[in-house]
Image 1 (cartoon, rainbow, N blue to C red):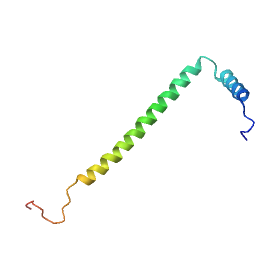
Image 2 (cartoon, rainbow, N blue to C red; image 1 turned 90 degrees about the vertical axis):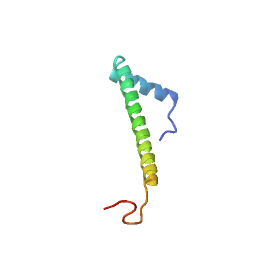
Image 3 (cartoon, rainbow, N blue to C red; image 1 turned 60 degrees about the vertical axis):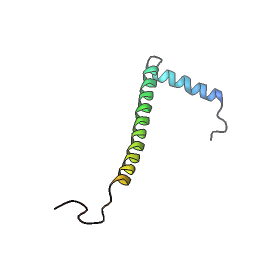
Image 4 (spheres, helix red, strand yellow; image 1 turned 180 degrees about the vertical axis):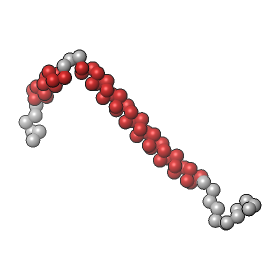
Length: 73
């Protein structure tokens, strides 16, 4: 399907997009796309940080096998 796709085809597609959206709207579209990517990256980083935090908290939690380990009831 993509074997015949050349630089000319990409140029024609770019011109059609430019005609459809108009030159004034393209910077706003690019800015919106950039902000969306920035948000996505920050969410992925925070998810990785949450996973690492949960893992370290689980490992650091004191393990008590005894029912009354030092606490008076």
